[in-house]
Image 1: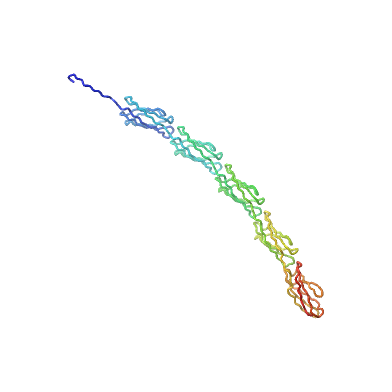
Image 2: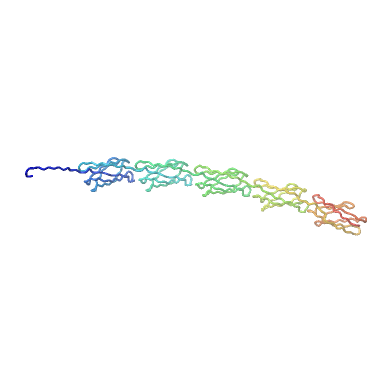
Length: 434
């Protein structure tokens, strides 16, 4: 002051050190990262410099904020440094990180040869990554903007396929799947048609692939291609009854087999025998039950021989001459040489003299009578009076005899009838008075 007295004081010029914070986030476009942050300081427009996996520098705005895009050399730590006008320094760091890409996919046979449909997805921040494949399929593909991919290719075999995807940071995601296909399943039947040894074969192949070939061996041989639904049918002649095996192989070399039996029931025969009334002629009738028997031959054996043809309705009728009374057999075979037969006896009743009438003339005695027999016209009527003799049957079942009267008195004449088989009737006695 004016007196010369001195008053003193002091003050400190001070400023808070700037405070830096920031982040560095991959954008999903290559190794580009988005860097944004803030510097808390009284002074605006400070410069921030970076080192580590990113470099460069940026000037904050008047509020201390900053933002920019740059490429990182790799994943890892980025360091930031800011220095204010007073030379005060603030450091901060951030980590550039990215999840490893996650790959998932499947490889499914299309049913066309060894063609497979490959589809999958890559989960990653980055789009448009490339996926490469090895194992039973090869090749590579680029995923779309959503990380999806799909394509078709041929596989070398069934088995494992591995996929690999590498992002811009060199991180690798692997996955694997199995190309698999069910073994084809074959089923079929082989049924005789009744036309010789022809069989009708029908069946199905169950498989992802259509148009497979099926081969057959055994009692018949053939090969056929199934339709789009796996079905097949054909007619073929078999060498005999028995087993047939079928085999189908898919595009992957997997084999499916099955077998069936060509089987047939032996024919059955019925028989009935009657006399026609014409000597020893008999009519043999009946039926044959069996597939494909119409038009085939039927043979007779025993006391009568002959052949006939089976009608469309399975019946038959054969007229033959028998050598004697006895058994007759009818035999058939089908196209498979299976035999069927039936036997029957010729039915015959002993003949009978049923009636005799007596008449007289001045010198003769007349007899007219009737007989009963299956073949009466072929029978012979014998008689015993003063002598023995015979006469024939006429008019279906009648006979006549004229003989001298002889001496007066009661007389008896005995008639017997013998049929075509040599069977004789009981004696028929007629008493008459002269």
